[in-house]
Image 1 (cartoon, rainbow, N blue to C red):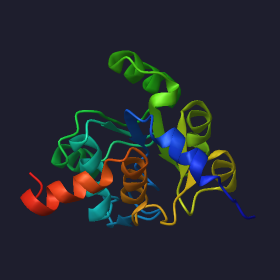
Image 2: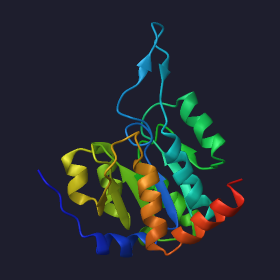
Image 3: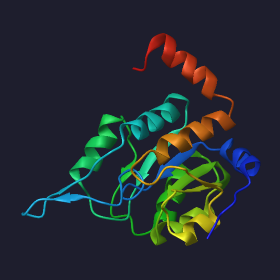
Image 4: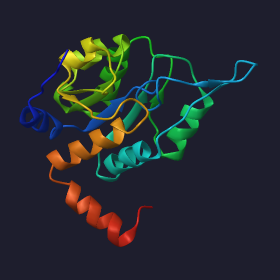
Length: 185
């Protein structure tokens, strides 16, 4: 199945994003995990995805981790490392959690961007203003997405989407110049 998306329409939607939320397993991490003989899971994170999240927060956009599966120490560590104060695990109702965040931030659906890959993401993707699916997302998620990344989960979809958002807002070049001149702190 092929999915052609209207990039100009996606840019218009991305311009309005004030809250960018994303799933963790399958989006921030690949759809694989390492497991030792005691059942301890280990996840891999794509370094550039973290820099993508940082680029948004540095430009005034709130970022939230929102996952429906188990709490894992690596994900919590990554959120703290990125200085995110909004990270949620075992979220049974993602729409309710986003509604709480919208109320807290005083924003509407049109100001929320969300990237997902799985059945558990579809309802929220239908609600938000800017819905994104990873390259390896299920077809149902791709069908409703405004933008489909070139990168699969765990291999740069967050970084790609964050750049897309900042470019749509006209903030990318100034961000690049700032980081180039001063580094990122």
